[in-house]
Length: 117
Image (cartoon, rainbow, N blue to C red; front, side, top):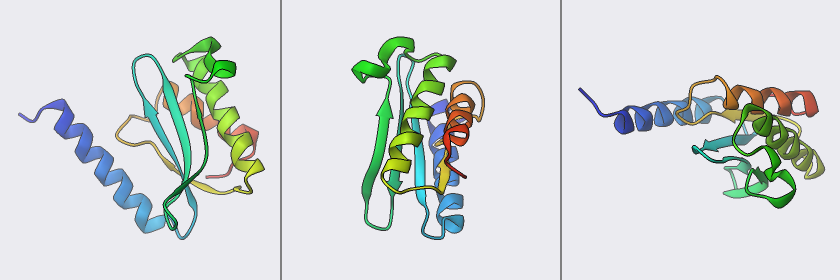
């Protein structure tokens, strides 16, 4: 039986491969979540640069931490920063995480704020 870390890495690689096939020059909204915090970045893979980011470690966004409500705040913040940077369309990279709970809340908040995936 494979360990959960190996399975996670396989899911992550499979997701990134699918994104690279569909991306067609769009930026990527990448998510990382830990037990205490959640992070989101808008990355332009063609130049290898982060265009916008937000995390629950930032002083003004720290209030809710790594809860579903906190993830919604992070999603809204990263979408606002992306729109300010001129990015309107992104590809959602959930990494190896299941599209549920905090990941889903972050994605939905980013969509409501104006990003389109």
